[in-house]
Image (tube, rainbow, N blue to C red; front, side, top):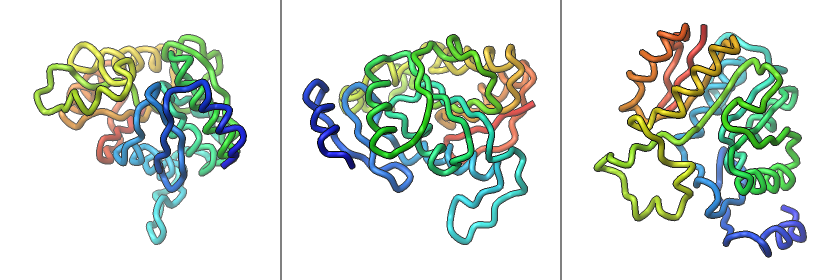
Length: 223
C-alpha cells in the first residue's frame, strides 16, 4: 500500500479503516458502505459466468460470457466490486459509477493503491454512462427502514444514501432494471436481501429478464 498517498488522502477525509474483501485490503470511511462477505458472492457469480474458477478445486461452469467483456458497476461505493473484477479479469473493461462524489474519491484511492485500471464516473445509475456494457453489476441501497430486524444503531456509521431505499427497499433496483432493459443490456447481477428476491424476479420477468442463478444474496438475470 502506498503510505505517502494514503496519508495525504486521510488528511482531508473522515477517519479511515481497512477491511478485507476477496483477499485484498480496501480503505473505507463513513462515506461508503463496509464491504460484506455477502457481496463476495457477486464476484463468484461473475467469475463463474466467464468460466473462471472462483475457488481452488472448484470446476467452473462452461463460460457464458467472454473474459474481455465490458462491465458497469453501479453504485460502486468503495470500489470493492469494480476493482476486484478488474484484478480477477484483467482483460475486462470496468466502468464504476456512483452518485456520491465522496464515495468516488474513496474508490479512486483504492484503485490507485491496488493498481486497478478502472473508469470512475459520477452518475445516477446508468444516466451518465454512454457506453453499452455487456454486463451490469450493482449493490444498490436495498434496505427498508421499516425492517424490524435491522440494527439502525450499527448501521448509523454508514451513509444512509448507500443503505436505504423506498418501495420496500426496491426503488433503485427496479429503476436500474428499467434502464438495463431500455438499453437492451442482456446481463445483470444484483445484490439484494433474499426476502426481496421473489419480487425482483417477478418485476424483472415483466421487463424481459429471467432469473438464471442465485448465489446467496446475488441474483443473475439475463434475457
